[in-house]
Amino acid sequence: MNFPLLSALVAMLMAQVIKAPLQLVARRTWNPGLCFSTGGMPSSHSAAAAALAASVGIVNGFGSSLFAIAAVVCTITAYDAAGIRRHAGMHAVLLNRITHHLPESARGEAQAGQLKELLGHRPLEVMAGLILGVLTSVTLNFIL
Image (cartoon, rainbow, N blue to C red; front, side, top):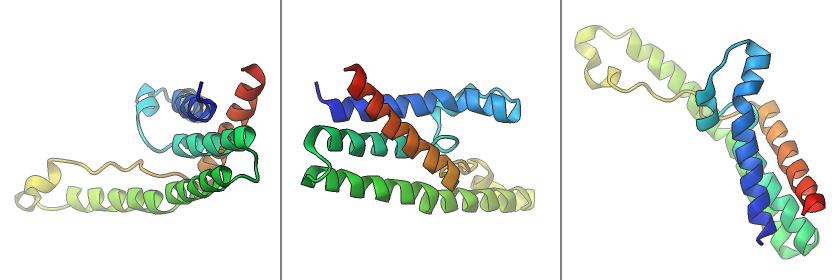
């Protein structure tokens, strides 16, 4: 059994599955499509990367080169989720608004495909993903 791979996959699936129930509790709206999309609470990318890093540390030691690699990849993933991908989503919101307000004659292909707006995460969503990932690895380590 590849414990780091299993931990990462379980953490990612858990993060995706709990997005819709969390939205229901927080905003009183049910949107099962959130379970299949990017963005939202918690970050599944951050959860997977944190679970991978934590489980590599558990298996190979936190002083190992493998843990160092996994920790750096985790940091880059979390930074990207809260930075670049979040800003790309913010740009998509503005571009969709601009396109919506164009005269019909100017819309053409621009209106045909709305840009996806929920791409990245707020820092709290990334932090929740990181915590979920580490807790998943630690829990699976005790169970297995």
